[in-house]
Length: 217
Ligand SMILES: [Zn+2]
View 1: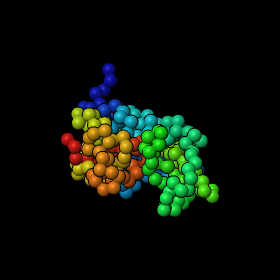
View 2: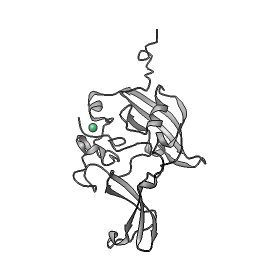
View 3: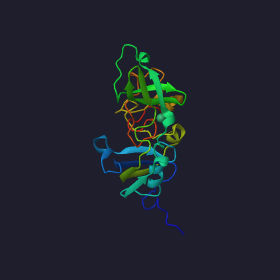
View 4: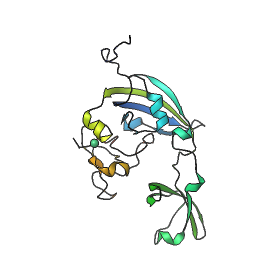
């Protein structure tokens, strides 16, 4: 018979738990791409697709205090790099703005709202890249599980963890997916309002109220 882990206060990461992890993300060459660092641990609702699938699988079954190296191939991370996500637009589309290579912006595409990066400017033609900047990359996470707790019913209903401090508590409700209701409506547009448009932490697949917590109850 299995030991009842809750009695030992060593709840394991499983569906319907809220997990906080510290992480450092490196590429194949060992360059640090992102780290929880000063932002503090990243909290997410396990099993709710808050984070990329490969990382979620890697954390499954761990307990607070555990450390692990998690290798995430592109197909379980940000996807393979797709040439289909490149598109050419005329320079005139930018109006008075001067586009520069590397510039990023949100735009509505036939795949929904995406971050587009200006990849190339060739005369009057601008190449936009809709791939995630980490598409095609194998991700090396060094993680440490900080805490694991059972999710509250409202968290399960909203599909993200709640923290004190309200929606504006520190940033990053992301954009898009969370707008179907709940605390992170983007109705008021991307500037100001409750939800910062800062990019969510790298490991977070989509917005949600991840790092900022939200005021909805
Ligand atoms: Zn919420």
